[in-house]
Amino acid sequence: QGWMGRIAEQLDHAEEEVLKATLRVITSAAQSNPTVQAHCIEQGYLATLISKLLTQPEKLAKSTVFTISAIVRNLPSGLDAFASLHGFNTISTKLALSSHGPLQRVILTLYNDLLRQSQVSGDNKVLSALSVASNMLCKKTESLISDPTSPGDVLEESIVFYSAIKHLCSNEINNNVTTRLKVIQEGLVSVEGEEDIKKALLLALN
Picture 1 (cartoon, helix red, strand yellow):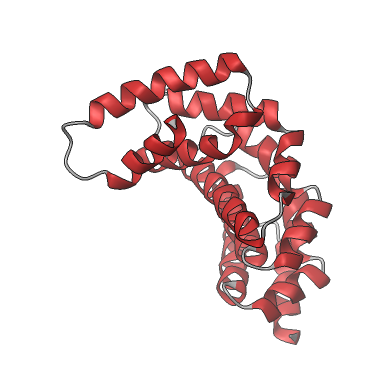
Picture 2: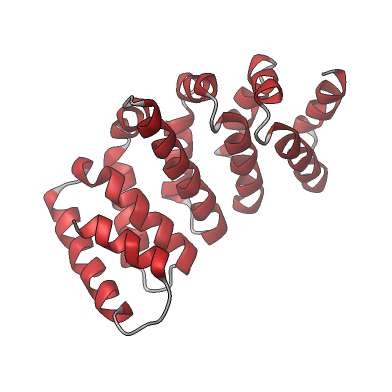
């Protein structure tokens, strides 16, 4: 793993393009590779990525979240490490502050993947962690679903995420979101395709 250490040294590089290239290499190496994922956690690369996220510009933060996702997904110890490093709170805060559609999508996709992973394993670790930031997350999700300019992929991931956390949201937010979801659903009745978002709407309104 010596080469990985030399690559990871560039995580502190001042030039954004060098940092993005470094993130791409780590992402490619860690994707579905438990050995590399564990190494990234043991050597502190995950901790470094989480610690830098809040101060990064949104386009760079998107790449960072994508790399974090590659390190922690489908790895039980990765989920534990992410939680212990305050990853949920950090990424929730970044989502709440974000106005950048691609960043919003990768954060929501990460959360939805982790929720599915948690459901398969039969524990409530992810929902427990999200409950700490539930007020912030519910408000942001309501905002994304209610915004008619939200990109389609962001809207779909927001609806899926809302389905998982709606029991954590206030009655007011749930009422507002339900009203908006019904409007979206009615608008798709005569539209061909869009099966994924139609399925997400049915789940959210159930």
